[in-house]
Image (cartoon, rainbow, N blue to C red; front, side):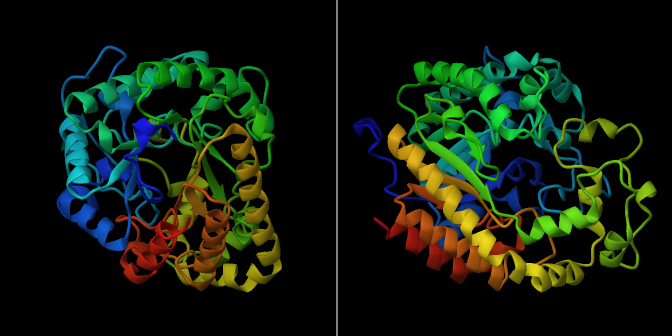
Length: 428
């Protein structure tokens, strides 16, 4: 790391506020009081907040967009899911909210990790589809630069307000191989399931966008977010990143559940007998589970489908968790081996590329809001295993768990977060 970046922490302890920090701002929602949330984050030992900074929603290539942002919701859909359970109806001065985030970060000695979920989930929560349509209308080969130009303007805005020292680094986009950025690969005939080919196809476009950002802001580290969920040659990753930012979702036993449910087979009948065995008694028929009339656009291009949301909304939490506990022993060794293998792959590549490594999300996978597997003894064991491995490899920063944030129940387990954030901060 260059001497101009010596103000950044020795280690990053990361809590992911994703897009919820601006979709859950109504009275009583977690992010209606940013000062209180920062106090809690510091109490738990965090020094870095990772967010979708909504660059495209707030800035064009030329500067600020005018007017407030209006937010909606998915209606009754998603109310027992993570991230999708916002109330909707807020009118938000997005620029002021962004500045308040940075103001509180500076006051509490925290740093902000800028990212974008705008070619994934975040447009689903706008009240009106205009900005979503504007994003979708951009040609696949131009989407990377479009986000980069908005990030450029966002950083210029933050600099003008005097908060740029709180930016730890900027990611071009969250999980580039999942979401609508993959249109550049599908246009070349690449299946979205072919992760290695998709990552390779995106490489020159990510490099162009990162090069633009590095040239515009040489004083701020630039990168893009990739996952370690699937194997692919790391030489396909953009070659001009300044941070090796990866996510590791191990899944394992969770894959057994989702495969048994038929979530990835749109041609199979749903819900089948297995799904029905997990449902609450008051679960509505799946054919009645739909977005409000005229709101179908909210899920267009969203990588999370209605089948998964239905299961998260209507599965009995204890039944879901019991399945995972009953079947975990079959997957335990493979899950730990995957953690070892993927983290070692990232480390080996980053050593040759001379980059610091950050794990920004993990570790089991996406589970319903009211279930407790990831927050329970097995989920904690897997997270702790990954944290020990990452620190032994000398990683710059790690998240404790994607679910350790104010909009998840895991936030209330203060002692565990304090213990493992301290572990990270005390590592060499």
